[in-house]
Length: 415
Length: 120
Image (cartoon, rainbow over all chains, first blue to last red):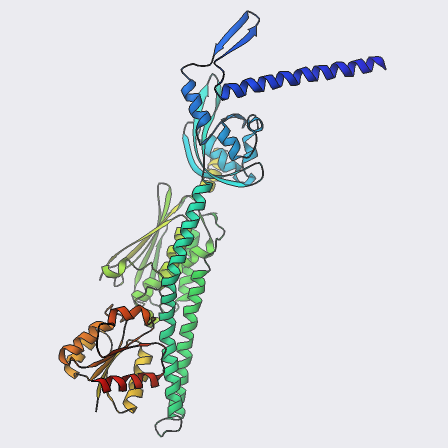
């Protein structure tokens, strides 16, 4: 029994001594970090050795330690070899728990391969991308990552500068909200105008029919004609309201990487169904082997249908529409070009505004192109238009190549 | 018989309004957009009823001005689906003119025309 007691006691003493040495070491590291220490004296087998810390590298160390961006060094086995304080705060963990931790701890499972692609697949290159990290408490942290490879004394890894985009994102969202609010006034006036016109027709027609019901030139024929007018004008109101709801229901939708050509083929088929009587000719020239882009299939169908409908209605049915896809660097392009009447320059700047239409009488609601613009912007893309009166109109859309899709593609190719 | 020029590019409203006004004994000429400018000169109406926003991006104001070139005392009724307060500032300086918001009752239009006639 006494022997066991003594062993326990000696283990306790040893633990205590290790703890105090650890505390001492941590205090030294903290002192080095806060720049309170100039030199370290270390006992070695060959005697005492002095390590001077105030070297020419001090400015670099200060720069990294004090900068307001996260900085980490990740070795090729995925361990965080070094992190600065800013990165630890971003991940909501003490610095001591960040250093030595696997970097995957801060990356969502579904993003692991994309992250690998960014920092490792292209071993010679430099990566830049927006990314979503996961803090220790599970919160998603939007960041901008700039990485570069290093290789020192047979140690290879990646240096990464991590910029927290949380505040920027919040400011952008607030701006979008205020812009949306400001456009509500314009929108309300537009709605009033569009709905009041058919309402006026309904009101006047109904009153006129009532007045004439007992007159010699009135009676059933006038009544029937009036009722038909009332029905078609009421249906017009319905179409306007429906289009408005579609416009207002601008919620975030799911997107995933896929071949844009699939959406084009489906959209063209849909347009043929929606526009059964039109004599338009649709010609597709789709480039094979396009890199994937992230999109919501239903929304992309709508983009195609709206653009084709626009061409067909502008050309009053007899129109030739050419639909082309291609790749330009990190972008996939879609061009929809018709040989219709074209858009006069004075209208060109406003065609993406809600409720701007030159074809209200033929069932246009003035929302089709603004819906297209909304969807493309939400997909991180751009849309532009070129038009010549008497020659035709070309809409050009650019969508960013998917980073996720590219990495999957790259890994398959590499493996 | 008083002559009225009706400029309205909503075909249904235009047709029904013309019938209603004819039944009240007005001599009505209808026109949509640009042709209204010529009709205005030839027909020389006593009053004009014109939509504010016309499809070829002209406004009712241009129609009213061309009618008044020939007959400066002609009455003007602007009709529009836009809220009246948004147009008030643009036509407030014109004498002998009224604004009617769509949808309106045709009795309102008839009494407005009567009022303009009495002021002439």
